Image 1 (tube, helix red, strand yellow):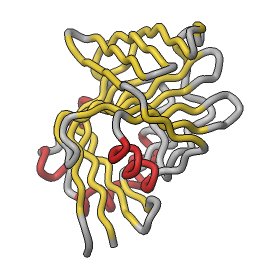
Image 2 (cartoon, helix red, strand yellow):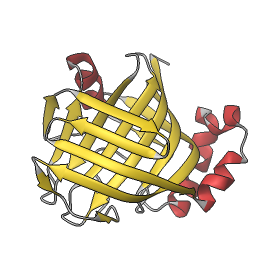
Image 3 (cartoon, rainbow, N blue to C red):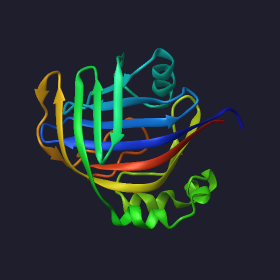
Image 4 (cartoon, one colour):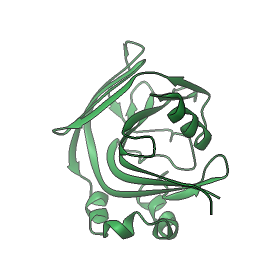
Amino acid sequence: MGSRWTFDGHIAGIGTASGVRAVVGVWQDSPFGAFSDVMVQQPSGQRLLLAPRPDVAEFISATYSFDEVRVVDVRASLADGALAVDAGPLAIRAVTGTRTLLGTALRAVPRRLAVHPRWLSAVSPLAALAAPGARTYGTAGSGRAEFYGVTDLHHLTSAVVSWEGKDAGALAPIRPAVTFGFSSVPPRPSLARVRTTVVEA
């Protein structure tokens, strides 16, 4: 077994009526310190990474697949039920709602177990049934394996999203699923509490 990287924070999945889809990572603790990043997929299918620093961009682009990578000022905050993101051409103001039924079930699993790679490997097929398109384990780029340990999940109830200064439309399901890696986010816009573990074989 090679290197291991652990990221603790939140992932928000957002879809819009225009077809712009965004996956926002707000990481409170990581090997790169606290940071935020955004993966954006256009209606055309083009995949773009917005990362705050070259080292972060290098790691993420080696793990996931993108057509373009930009290093821009990425600022994201989570407070009082609101998510605010400013990342180069993208701006998001979203409101979180109630905990999902899946989120309630996830909270019943002890955290140490819920984020353990062996557990996540075992329950990955069930995760795909509970949240179509989502997986808890899979292979990533550069010979890496990745584990998503989700411990809570809330709906996003509304969002104002702009891309390059233009309104991207109302909050909408994330369809088609994003294709940055082996897993998408749940189809319904949501905010997940997550620990992501990346392992190099």
